[in-house]
Image (cartoon, rainbow, N blue to C red; front, side, top):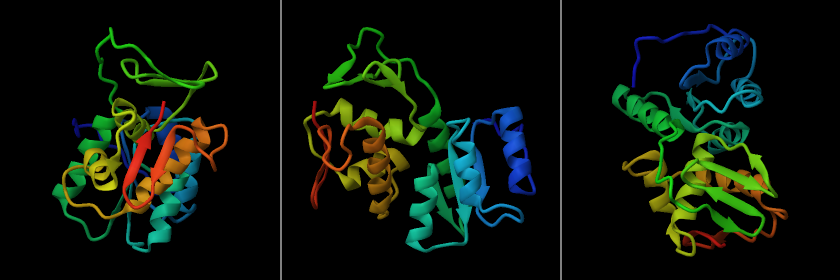
Length: 205
């Protein structure tokens, strides 16, 4: 990851203008801003960009983490933090966001009114492309590539956020909820993104 061009902003409005003008590879955001709440900045960013957003915050309450993720953040790092941990999270976020050419002969996966093009990293519902954040796509891609198989919560956490032990299963609940709202006709009774209580998640075609 190239860190030779790094920009900073002193407040939320400046950060939004800078993101719109420079289109950064990743955004690192503190929630404690002098003019706006950081979660409002996340929501505004999501109106025009799918750039990975990593939150740095002294707020350690689970509800604060869930709220930030629900507004569109890709990861949440609590203070104090180690520089090595942060750079690893940055690398993972950029890796998830990078479009890597897959096997161009790979057939799209069809599931009801969904078409998941794993090579193009694109999903359509009823023929219309659905915009996903990098983390949402990474979760959907992993489930789709293993369709029909049960993936444990721990396996998903390790695959998406790295090999270190992670216990924030609330992350997965938030992202699966967002995916269901975007992809399922009835998010409360999903046909494809299935929760297996106490075990993990499964994608049904």
